[in-house]
Length: 161
Length: 451
Ligand SMILES: Cc1cc2nc3c(=O)[nH]c(=O)nc-3n(C[C@H](O)[C@H](O)[C@H](O)COP(=O)(O)O)c2cc1C
Ligand code: SF4
Ligand code: FES
Image 1 (tube, rainbow over the protein chains, first blue to last red):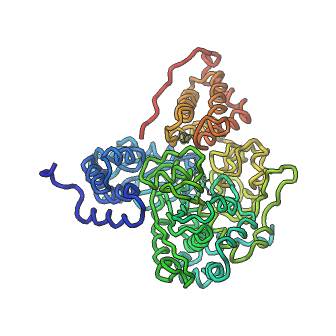
Image 2 (image 1 turned 135 degrees about the horizontal axis):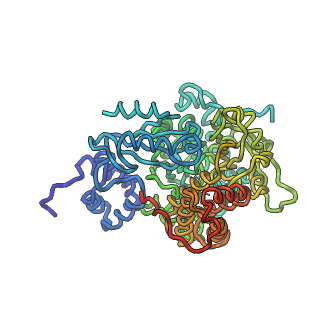
């Protein structure tokens, strides 16, 4: 274990530790830690889970248990540079959300949950993104894109470097 | 009704409405000053109780009453969790408040924490709200700078820390004990109650969980007074001894097949028709409405001839719906097939079931498999009865599950099959002419996606 290179950088560790005073237990820092690692690496590999557990004085299985519950963290491979969440819940579905997801799936050649071969885009379906007035909507990393037509979706995909 | 002016949304859409400067220019943080200077926590509890404010997160529980369930003279800590997980399909009012008027939310939160003797608050926000997250974090920082947060707030001796905590994409984190488990770093498995959070909640300490819009209302109660709040809305139904009335302004989210989807503020008790016509600009494309969800998908379904339903805490129940829920109205026009609606609903709940209770985990996924089969032309009339059997057996109401997600899954099934049975039967018969009358067991068509 000692000779394998660490995955968590000093910076990530410092960022995680900065959360400790906020909570009466270290376990409560699990989600913040997963977010920090996920933001930097675009996934949370098993090695990182072990290192997070070590920091939080938990068993790795506790962190893994939590991680797998939430749909947000990838573990097998990093997400693409742009994670494209297409809403499929009712308000969006009424305005073409499912068709938009199908369209993107065909044009990108990936199924929801998969990443394009060039590593640019991970297509995801989302349940209600809380922006139903903009249906059908897409969350592209941190940016909410309102009322997306198929044409706009194609343009959006083009802009991702 | 005509003289009603928005209060919660008064600043939304104005330039720089998210900054402390603009908020203070329109009287922001005066309520907090007044409370800290002149009232005790107990006074705040009592006045909130007197206002008749009921929780805006879905259950409509009286807010002041909830606070009084906290143990008296507890040595602390008492935690306050602000529920900003908002994920009920159709609902986005919390997002609007957080993005466009975050200080209103924070002022209400600080007053609510003072009322409950909480020194630490966790602002639990779903992670799919990047702009709201940024705005709230900025606003919290501005509050520390101004002395509205931190030690000895405005010289009152009261101290409070607010920590923003992000979720990770799970609807069940909105259920209050699921939220608490998630906050503690675990899978968001709702807890068996009792004990209720007020007695044993986050980190095993007394905890209050309230919704974003609820605390925003608290701010206005202490700005404008209990009488003002009670002058809006609908008094208790004399024929219903358990009705506590529906007071105050409410944010209504309107989406689906509507000309002007959006978040609108109106007194509690506006009807679906009024909402659609006066705010939503009517059904889109000049079409007729067929049905609407009254308050988030969990609440069930209203038919077009039920749109005179009043959207107060008592209203939707009179039409067989689960309740007012989040007051998110989703309009469906005459072209919508109920098979599609129901499959969408079932898919959502089977995806979001936390899997803890067998009736919910199995029931929601079987319903999705059956609806998928029906949709693909392999339905049998018997399936409608099987779906109803599932719907009647999952949930807190029949007493088979830990939390209300299963009731939310059941209601669209119950309402839709009751109110649109004929349409569903016609669909099944016409798409499966040779097999609709079969009753023998059939294997599921496809497994659910695991994602
Ligand atoms: C499955 C489920 C999901 C829920 N989601 C939310 C939510 O996203 N936001 C919310 O405020 N309340 C939600 N609730 C209701 C909460 O459990 C709780 O009643 C509410 O946060 C209390 O706040 P209030 O009294 O201010 O309404 C949900 C309940 C259930 C059963
Ligand atoms: S009812 Fe469903 S969501 Fe709620 S605790 Fe049980 S399995 Fe989980
Ligand atoms: S249903 Fe798509 S954002 Fe709400």
